[in-house]
Image 1: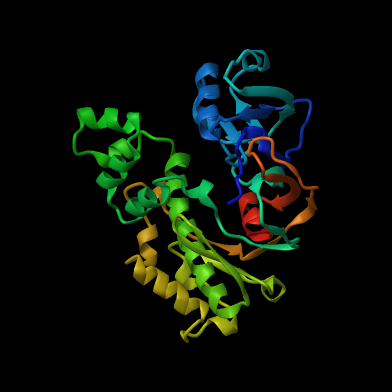
Image 2 (image 1 turned 180 degrees about the vertical axis):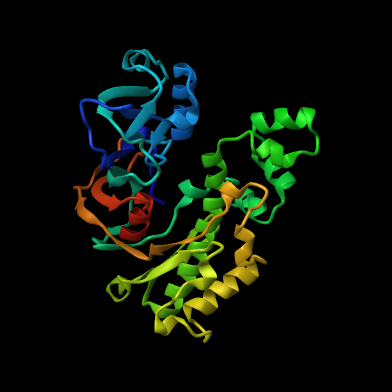
Length: 347
């Protein structure tokens, strides 16, 4: 089986930012370069050393931990010189300029990737112009989906236990049965990440089932939460969007050919997935922590893979007798580079 991220230099991610840099403004913009660091952990440390709240450090998206990554962040409430003195292992901060808007999740055009695929032997590579827009393992980690499921189902005690976060645990030491209070000690964007992970799992399951029935199946790939179906005729589905399920998803006006409840229809598949999870749309209204409630949104099933370049086969210096290849491409925001590798590499 091929190997990705055998070393951080094998996986380079450069954010394609849409931030407008100016000479003046309340917000400072920095290019954050990191190696083997989690974005949220780095943001937390920047806030700590700057003596500001975490919410004053804005970023457009989480970048892979096991990689070399670059992204633009905004900082409010601290001077440039103090930020320049911040010292975090495997992290660099480069001042870019100022502006009047914070950077929020989604404030980017996309990402450019340079990836080395290692441990190749008997394989083939197929170019592709389009990609099934699945969420990959980075979204789910080990327990993200389970925590998100507990939150949506109002099983707050179970969610806190599974998260095992020191801030929440400290609260429970003094308030034994106050699981909601413990959750409120955590950053809102962390809690949202768990709920979003659960929505992402439901989306993957819906799309895989739909494409298995409607598309020309090219291959099925196993992942930690089930299987992902890749098809040979993506051009037929380029306008297809499927909802990330939320409390308003029941009101979606599907296209005519998806409205009925016949076998294989999109509405039928979503109903089956929700029944499998014992879910109702209203479960995504979380009154105990209203900010966690999720309305749902549409997500394109296919996205374009731009500027795909397949490098020359070389000897893999880390895996004796095997080969390696470097690939480069760009994807729109919210899409996963590892899915491109899953699609183009065949063993």
